[in-house]
Amino acid sequence: MAELRILLADDEAIVRAFIKRVIEDERLPVAEVLEAADGLEAARLALSAEPDLAIVDNRMPGLSGLKVCELIHKEKPGIQVVILSAHDEFENVRKAFTSGALDYVLKPVHHKQIAELILNAAARLGAGESPERPVRDEGGSLIKAVKDYIEENIETELLLTDISRAVFSSPYHLSRKFKKITGQPLKDYIFSRRMTRALELLKNADLSITEVAAMVGFNSSSYFATCFKAHTGRSPSRHRQK
Image 1: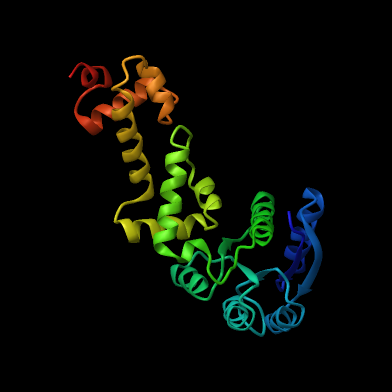
Image 2: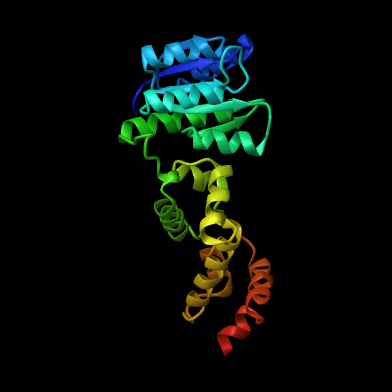
């Protein structure tokens, strides 16, 4: 996995210290950490030092995180940018992704969140992924990647966080984008695919109802039967008889 040069931009020293501690505790693939306490310094360091990843707070003196992100995206589009914010405001989230940010993370950030976003950034760098054309921005490609992942992992719990990580997106952006393009919430699509797969598997008389339930991601055969009946109007056993 590639080692990163990271820029931490936050006017709160305690936040920068926390992220550095996570890097040390988890032994994350980070070669160098640059720090900035305001937006102007963040922009200067980003353009001069060209870090692989910039983690920037949205509300800083000088320039906001969104402005820094816009500048980086325009001048140095190869830099991956993650914006931190204490405010879950739709317009800010929309502007963040429009400005080229790869993710928008709400404060207070947690140990696991920091570790995951840095590992994901290192994986992208190692795989040669370009932030200029991330999978999530290519609508058709994103939806295909999501659907392929679901088909390959239909027997698992299929958590939104796992799916978004697999397609290099954020959970918030992925769920919104999926519904906008397909017209269907992601959880509804997953349920529909589970039921469709169950209908196919039930044709095999050698498989028990419990086995079919497990093969489409249900830990409980009774709950599977309830969901199946709600979807088809028949119980799995009744459907098999038909």
